[in-house]
Length: 125
Image 1: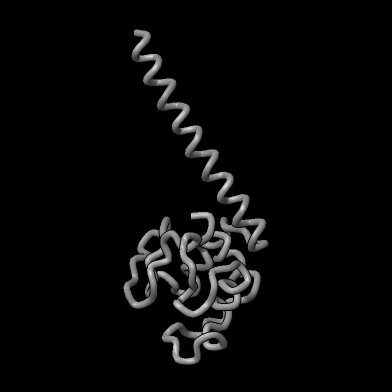
Image 2 (image 1 turned 90 degrees about the vertical axis):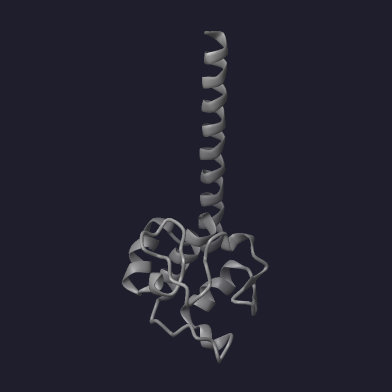
């Protein structure tokens, strides 16, 4: 009985730690980007990002044309051409050709605020 309680307590503490880490990542992403990650899934769908990219947590986002956006916050570079920072990511999303004229990523018409929301989502996940 005591062993079962200890195992349950250990599992509960581990789960609480996962939630705490997720919350901390989200708060840091929001602070860095000034975006709202909750708005991102609809924006990804509206602009068709999932057709080209694999995006964690977005149903059907398993595209292979563009880069896999999983664990983007851990990378050194964005698209192999920009240092990975919130401002660079937002700039890349809004106008990729300004940073790499021959990129296959199109100018989508995504606004600066929408790009901040997408960046917040990508850094939080």
